[in-house]
Length: 328
Image 1 (cartoon, one colour):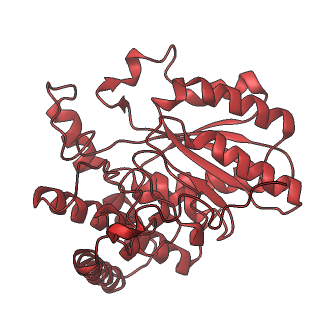
Image 2: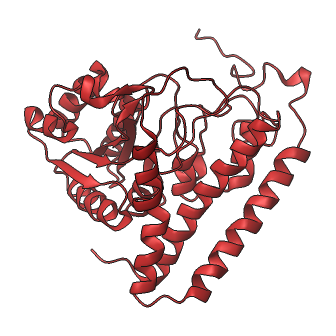
């Protein structure tokens, strides 16, 4: 499947936004403006955006603890996302969610979770809702190679296969669950092969190639919309940064040469920029998008910094229905 010219530029724009957003968060952490730490998705932009570009605006996504990029990939405004990470009242969750619990219903981002694999059944629930309501919406769940070993994935895939739910399970296999190599925790190297046990398609794709991810997800989306059920997609990708920025990790679990290889040879932004130029896009077009993204993130940082923290008296807002109605 070939993206239109407009879709190509928007794909590049969203990949750049994720990269710039994560770099802004890293800077704010180092400056002491972000409480706690954050998990960066730098290096995984092609998997995120390629998947999201294959979805409609009214489709759903669920995320992980490493999920700043997912709502951005779906088209979310970066200002309230960044404000949320700083715990501000103007954030998408009014400062209650922070880095690992972003949600933006405006773009179908139904939630992210610090619980490993926590978003998998939520996406299946959204898919069940669409099926019951008779819409042709689909849901896509992002999860990592660590979550692939959680029982919730097996349970949810089995249920989704039986009920033919319009859900896509997308494993962002970045080769490490925190500091544990996937090779030490997987009986065989390909998560996608697990699909065979549930009678659903299992697809392996290069997670650094945004077009390859787009094609794989678009095929799965079409299948789901036609009532043919779920697909398991494994995107082989790589995170460039430490497991968690702002949290000291003791000991080297990756080699410098491995990290350098991915940064120099497999950077998804560099690869896609070169492809766009080869396809006839001009350097001026791409530079215009790059400048626009830089301005957008600068404005987002200013917005987040100058936004107020939630007022003390709002502490219990949005926790309960008000007034609370009890059954007779």
